[in-house]
Amino acid sequence: YRFRVKQVWQYLDRLLLFGGEIQGNSLISLVNPSSTAAAEANAPTWTKWQGYTGNASTQYIDTNFNPSTQGVKFVSGDCSFFSYVRTNVINEGSADFGLEANTIFPSDAGVADGYIQTTVLSATGTSLNTLGLFAMKRDGNDITLYKNGSSLGSNTEAPLAFTNVTAYVLGINVFGAGLIVPCSRQVSVCGMGGKAINQSDLYNII
Image 1 (cartoon, rainbow, N blue to C red):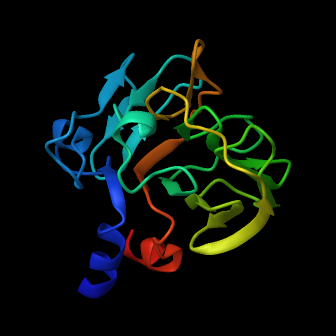
Image 2 (cartoon, one colour):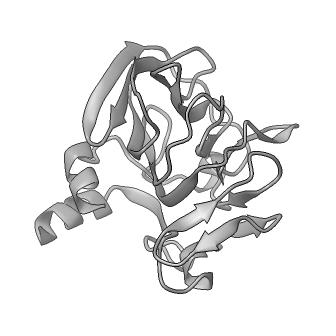
């Protein structure tokens, strides 16, 4: 087990465990904890041992992580990101985590859609609920969407450059527009790192 944790940990730039015991500590990344802490915007609901819940309108978490300037493991053509969702809210047309051209829509009409370094639909797969760990991975031009450690779908698309914005939780951050497609789900974990993260190990650890 400790080996699996080490294998995942070494490929991460940020790991936020929102479902902790102390609210303030939930905003400090477990990986690179001296980095700027995440920040609440418009008071999303925090629940001990569970995480943050949005209102599908104005509430979100700014991770204060900007891949275009701060990415070490999360870099162009070699990146992955993930979030763990605890509530089932389907057909909302919303996202739980991401930034421009990098996000996942976990379940609309029974389908999950994922984007990573592209504004073109990257990968799709069957997802009848929004519960669990959703992740996107890019390896060069190859893109894969995961749920609970297993592939839902894949595609091939050349990578776009990262936009100069920070990643949001409970919605996504788009340059010039700020928060879009905010959600009302509860998110307990999120992170960003390299393509080498073993998705099955990540899911089992979380």
